[in-house]
Length: 214
Length: 336
Image (cartoon, rainbow over all chains, first blue to last red; front, side, top):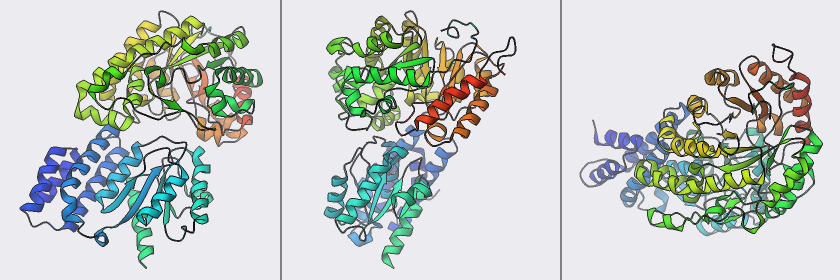
C-alpha cells in the first residue's frame, strides 16, 4: 500500500500515533505533494463521516479520527501552508449563544483543517459580539455558525443583523449548520448556505469560496 | 401509580416530559428566573399540570441536580438552558476537585416539596437526577470525555465511579422529599452517540448499580435520548421499572424487545410533533403510539424528551386531549 493510502487508513482508523509517524515520513522521505496530502485527509474524514451515517462509527470513533487529524496536521502544517494564499480559506466557527453542543462543531473543524482551511474555533455559547470581533480580526472568508436546535434561530438572526450593522455582510459568507437545519430555516435566517454533516459542509464551503474568487 | 405497581389502569397514563424547559412559559416567566428561583419553577410546573391535566409532574430543584452538585459552575441567562461554564476535570489529577455538595443545602429541595404539596394528592410527582455517566461527561466536557474512551479508558471508569455518589445523594434526597418515582437521565449513553459496546463497558455498570440502590426507595424510570433500540434489552435489566424512550425508537419493536417486563414510556417527538407540528399531527402521533403499544405490555404515553419552550401550548393540550380520547382501556382489549 502506498504511503499516502496508509496515512489515509490511519486517520480513518483513528490511529493518531501511526498517522503522525506517516505524516513525518511523507514530509521527509517521500515525494508526496501538499495537494495529495490534503486530498487524502479530506477523503479520510469523508469516510469517517460516512461510517457515522451508516452506524458503523459513533461519536467516540469520530473524535478519535479528529484527534488523529489534529496530531498529523501539527506535523504537516508547515509543509502544507507556507503562505496564506495556499490555504483554502479563513474560517471563523463557533456554536451560537444558548447552545452548548460542540461535538459536531469539532468534527467539522477537523474536516475543514484537513481540507486546508485556517479555522478559528470560538467554542460554544458564543456571543454575537465575539463572532463579529473575530471576523474582523482575522479577515475571515467564511463564518460558520453551529446551532444544534431550532430554538437558537434568534441567535442566528442576531449575528446576521450585527454583520449588516458593521458593514461586514458582503465581506464574509455565512454558513449555518446542525442536525436540525433545513433550507427553510437557512432562508428565514438569511445565511448564504447551510449544512447538516461533514460532506455537505465541505461542499458548501467549497462553493462559497469559489463564489468569492469569481 | 397503578401502572408502576403492575396493575392495569382505566386509561393510558399521560406523563409528558414537561419540565423546567417548558414550564416557565405557562406563567409567562423567563427560564433564568425560574432556574434560579426554584419556587417559581415549582409554581410553573404546578400551573402546567393544572392547565393541561396530565397525570404526572416532573419536579425540578432549580439548578440543584445540575453538575453544580459536584462543584461544577452552572449559569443560566434569559430563556437559554442552564450551561456548565467550566469543566472542572482537566485530567486524572483533578479527580479530587469533585466535591459532593449536600443536595439539601441552600433550600434546594424546597421547590420539590412545594410541587408535591401543590399537586401530589392528584398526580404522580417524578424527581430527576443524572446518571453517573452523564455527570462524568458534564464535569469533564463531552468532547474530552468521549475522546478518553480510546485514550484512557481506566480514567473514564474512575471518573464515572467518582460521580456515582452525586447520583445517589440527589436521588435519595428527592425520595426523602417525597417524589413518587425517580427519572435517571443517561442521555449521553444513547446509541445515537456511543456504541452498544461502549454503553456496556462504561455506562451500564454504574447506571445499573445506581438504579439497584435507588429503587429500594422509589421506582426508577431510566431515560436515554434518541436511539436506544440496540441497548433496550440491557436497559430492561438495570432494575428500572420504566424505560423512557425517545422518538427515533420504533415503539412496537421496543415493547416487544422488553416483553412486558418493564413499562415503556414514550415516545411522541417533542420537536417534530409538539414544537413544530399541528393539532392534526399531534392526534396522528398519539393514535400511532397507542396502536403500537396496544397488547404489547404496560405503557405510559409521553413525549420522548423535554418539550422545548418554543412549543405551542395548544399542542401540549392536544397531546393530553387525544391521549384521553384514544387511550381508554376496554376489558381485556387494552385500548379502543
